[in-house]
Image: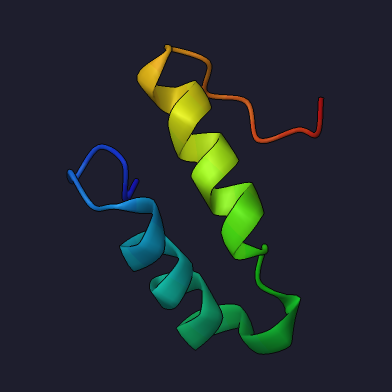
Length: 47
């Protein structure tokens, strides 16, 4: 949802940390997901 709201990967990560704390996805994962989202791949599964 953050991607569709034009948020950055860093902003999305901060929001996830607020909710999930240490269990939130890593910054690296968030950046990778956003890169994929820009390419039209909306899967968050590891590849």
